[in-house]
Amino acid sequence: MSGLALDITMTVNGEHVSERVEARKTLVDFLRDDLGLTGSHVGCEHGVCGACTVRVNSEIVRGCLMLAVQCEGAKVETIEGLSDSGEVADLQLAFEQRNALQCGFCTPGMITAAQELLAKGGVPSRDEIREYISGNYCRCTGYHAIVDAVESVAQARAGAAK
Image (tube, rainbow, N blue to C red; front, side, top):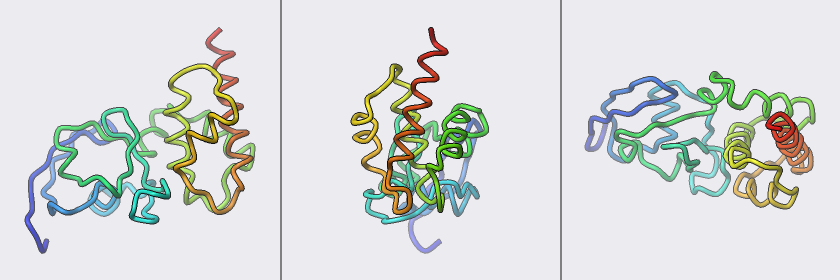
């Protein structure tokens, strides 16, 4: 480590983590490099593309804009944790069935953002889905299939809730 290092403690995907990290290390770099959780990607490093989207204390954040030390005592959830818990299994299946992923680089961030929207309940309009995922860039799909997948899951969840 070349700079000031600090001890941090947090919960990542349900597991207690205590590490010493460089004060300037981003959350996404900490997750990827130190913890081996490579599902969240590093894209633009400016908070624009959404590839680094994770949940901190139940809210989505850009992992490239947050420092790991800012997560002291926090609950951090990555796509690995959301997937392992089964929370996003229906979204993952819908993305696969609707061909809403191609290279997969944006998919973890898209699914994490979509899950936050769908957790609010109800069936959002296609425009609301587009608006909610607008902070996540996809260079492959053209978004139509992604909106289809999110919409289908929202409808299925709303039907199951009845």
